[in-house]
Length: 186
Ligand code: HEC
Image (cartoon, rainbow, N blue to C red):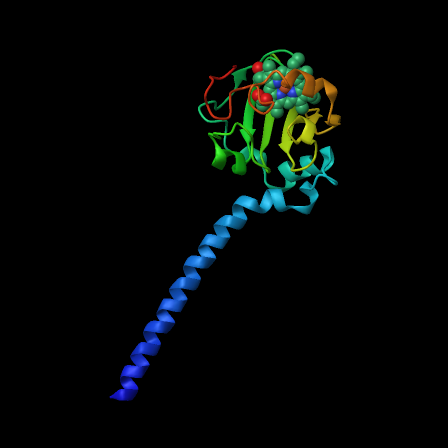
């Protein structure tokens, strides 16, 4: 009898430990899913480049499956200098964070603007990627522009991109404030 009771206690303890492990591993899985991008060594401020970013969004975490900017799906009319129409894709870390009360996009945020010509053919890509420590003077954004096939047209901290986007009231993002406090285009 005594042995039996001991065995039951042992079983309960084992079950409780197993449940705890299961819960802990689920939590850590979700955490690592959210932080994979910002902790990738090739997204470090010292090694980010247009080529690394292009490979990441095409061969790795494929951007065509990324979320759209909330309530801004599909082809939208664009403003100068970006082309007649565009489609916006955002990385999962940014999608998870929106709306951002502080108006500062978290590391791992990537905003891809697929630019289209008047015939609705892809004319190129302009991208902002938040890389911690990359450019503290201008929001730590890495900027890149590509032709439709990935040919690099500009990358890094182009004065041209930064000076125009500096008009934003929300971390250099022009489409909409990150806290959703201003409508699209404000
Ligand atoms: C003359 C101003 C101007 C310049 C220069 C400019 N942009 Fe933009 N950008 C805009 C505007 C306006 C939008 C809002 C969307 C639209 O209307 O096309 C925008 C939107 C974007 C977006 C979508 C996120 C957001 O901020 O709304 C990205 C990404 C982007 N631009 C990247 C770039 C890159 C990379 C460069 C440099 C190669 C660049 N831009 C140069 C004006 C500019």
